[in-house]
Amino acid sequence: MISSPYLGVVAMVFIAVGILAAAVAVGVLIEFFARNRRDRLARHESMRTHYRRMVLTP
Image 1 (cartoon, one colour):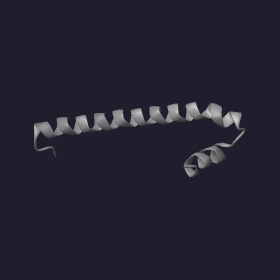
Image 2 (cartoon, one colour):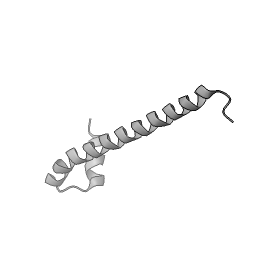
Image 3 (cartoon, helix red, strand yellow):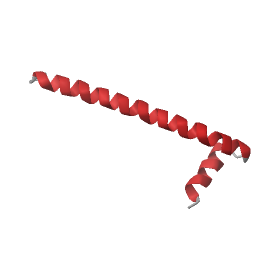
Image 4 (cartoon, helix red, strand yellow):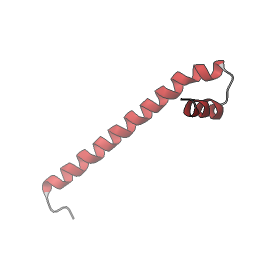
């Protein structure tokens, strides 16, 4: 049981910030993949090959 009235508010704010951070992270990932799609298609690479090349090249 919640022993303090403020603890419930803090928990709700914590959950709201977590949901907001997850939504921003998903948006950033979608933007990243959408931006790199044109380059990947121009090279006729699979997703696996394209992102492996991005990770392994300095």
